[in-house]
Length: 451
Ligand SMILES: *Cc1c(COP(=O)(O)O)cnc(C)c1O
Image (cartoon, rainbow, N blue to C red):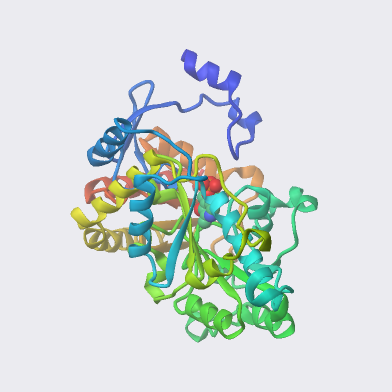
């Protein structure tokens, strides 16, 4: 084993990883990258099939982003947003307001998706406490989907509902109301025909609201596609219905676009697909195109104004992370957004999305592929033990993990979510690379599931 591989095993505790298993394998140590390829310390190349955990947008070593960061380094790397401002943070905030739905006019920075969610929920909570002199102060509860994922901090975990990640922390969490996710492959209300679907799975949402809208602060959801839940795709019109229910009942709609933002669904933001304006929107992963940790929580004029008052009114939003609005992150994000326009990224993406859809059709014949869910450049391939009755694999079979190890041998880097194989390549991937990614993924699934 290479000395770095040994030292990884010796010193590092990896995120979301059973370290007992980790220590049985030789760790993959990445040293460099170019375009959609990662390279390990032995010089072996891998297609970055999950965009380095859903962050990379325009490929690795993107010259314009490097230049933007270099140029900024000649001026300053970081100064504080507490009591002062900085040039790129202002420029980026203006840009973010421009590219998001019209009603979002204020930008609150942080440094990752979890903090962006914490900020969203604290803003929503405090907003109702302060609006109209406390007239709505009973609105303190949050509703989210049964299998939601909004981050790993205690507040964002409270919104979450993925039992294997979240169950153990229950005593630490605040209570949230869960409604069934529209997981159509395993429909929570046993609807047989998706064509006749009238979103019966929203009945609990409607019932809860009928009973206690006066207690509900906000509904939180990833629009169109729940990422970490296993790429659970919402049926068309679902988000529109949610928006209407929230608006009719004076409930804030918080959209978590940490995964779906920055082109992943084929639009800059997923909510554009149904023309939805959220009250609060969070973004992180793709914001700096996979370069630096930066996040933002955007909100409306109405919400912002509920925090205005004299100092002794105690309406201030007392929240702020040390590296908030970091200059290097902000220039990377500005360069990212510029590339979208200059290289017509979203326009060129449409053809690649169609190509992806067509290629995925060819996966359907495999014996152990139960469901394929695609939303633009986000894909989840759910493997099942029995296709007829949708029986899942046993957790001890580690089927997803076996598939990604097989793919790794063949030069593809992907990561499963349980038994669902995730594909989310950089938007910059070309058709030939995309074809290779899909061919290797397919043959890896075939080899592992036929064993
Ligand atoms: C990744 C993710 C988060 C958490 O972001 P971190 O940067 O890992 O804290 C939150 N929400 C969604 C939808 C995500 O995909």
